[in-house]
Image 1 (tube, rainbow, N blue to C red):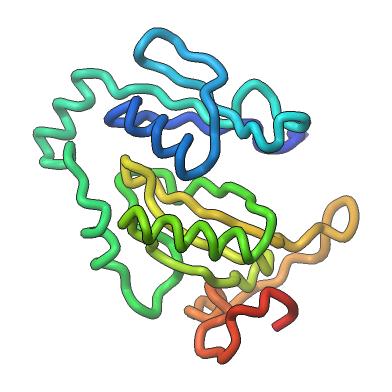
Image 2 (cartoon, rainbow, N blue to C red; image 1 turned 90 degrees about the vertical axis):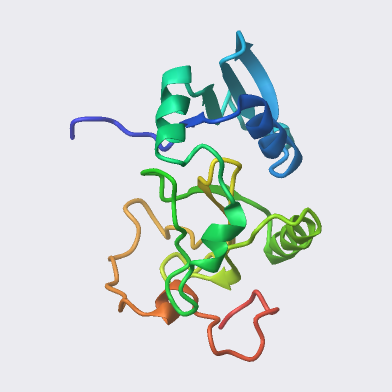
Amino acid sequence: MVVENMGLDHVAIKVRDLEASIEFYRDVLNMAVSDRIGEAVAFLRTPAVAEQSQHHELNLTQMSDEELAALADRDELELDLHEFERDLPEDGPPMLPTTGPIYHIAFEVPDFEAIGNAAEKLNARDHPIYRGPGRHGPGNNIFLYFPDPDGNPIELTAEMEKAPEAGGKPAKRWPRTPETWNVWLNTENIGDSGSE
């Protein structure tokens, strides 16, 4: 063993507009700024789990003028998040088109009802939802995918399968099919978050 890994601690991402990103993570994902460095960096945490949380779970850093200019040169400075939504294959995996190497950042919510409420509130904001609600085969968790202001994919997840003991259970090899990504495809009652 090279590293005694105790689990993921925080994620740090660069953003086009720090204030817009703070607003999104505050108003949509119920996070709060725990500290700032000048006008360029913000550290955010989730107050709802303050007793279990540390100083920050997310670090947002404003892109430099040079990075913003490079995006402008590639015509990628302004994003239409709904445009990505239109490009999704209908029967493909719930993964999103991304604006960078981040595939998605997942936030845990209490249950299926919380995911349904989030979907309703995102729709009320006219914010695109790329996939979900649904349930993954691997992990058996419920999901909802949507972008942040920079197009970074966000996942809300609930009811993730627990590892039964230290080391977990033997890994299963799933087929690469749409039903593996969402076991609720082609089913009658997706509102029941219980057993399939």
